[in-house]
Image (cartoon, rainbow, N blue to C red):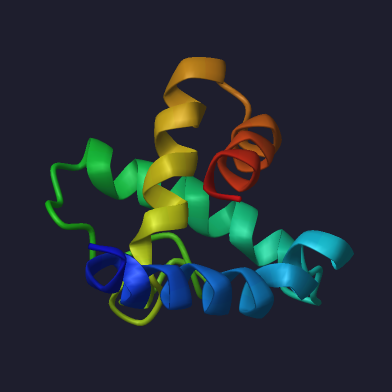
Length: 102
């Protein structure tokens, strides 16, 4: 019976050790942290314009637009957009999304 759950135990141990640096050092900050806030707002605007799934950020790059959502993973922007609709603050929604996805 224990042999049946042994692969899952190995997987849990491997995941724990692989994610340990993330939990010790915290959220990785980079030089594009401000761009993440802009992307969240553009994602919200794309959803408001009935783009399902959102693919075009029409206000980026001087108003010319960009297909930026095709190149970035949408989970963070989707969760932050939900929190933005609840809180009305992009910074607050990004913080809640980071804590929620952590």
